[in-house]
Image 1: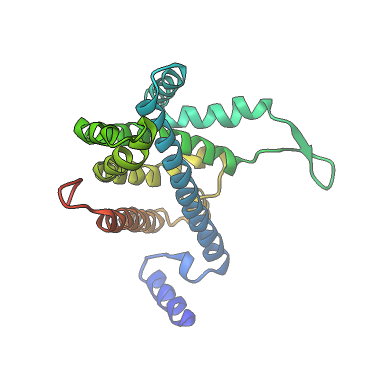
Image 2: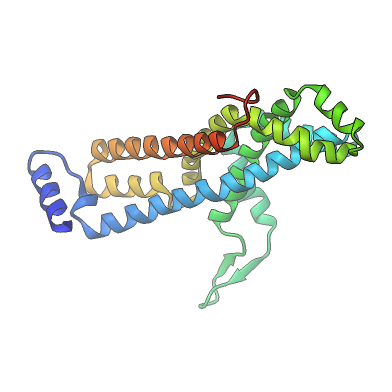
Length: 249
């Protein structure tokens, strides 16, 4: 089967379409590694951004003190500054303050690598938008549900945890899907700090093989598939959690 793909790619090359990732083992290997890195960024940052969003929305929903003010300041800062600037800030500014170790031959190496900084920057970026997404979902829950829970003897925290938050989550799915699609596309910004994700390795491949047109088309197709998978997963989760009369159908 692999030989069949290789021969097909060579036939395409003869016709002027140079997809080296299908017949060159080195290009294929680094392309797969780049795709795996992109998928890892998407999965890890999605997890942490949802945690950040849920924690921030819960803070805004339950408190009115300094903690809520800090969350609002964080959201305002992240939403009103470019992601690339944030990525550079963490990698170059904060990274310069971190301790430095040594490799096997005594050369200095940062204790926190570029992949980790990309995860931090992307998670905080998407998390700020998720805070507002979950907050708006919680705000969409009619106040009578919380009042009924309080009348039944629930504390304010338990009413939020067991009644308001689960219902608010169901109102948040459509906006959450948009945020996670944006996060998936934004992983390309990690290229700027040398993370060998899909755009980074594709740039290396087309620089070596002069097949920019082919690689750009491959990248567009792959990101279309990745975002489609994200939307499909959110849709499945939404359908599984659907309650008649609540959230989007």
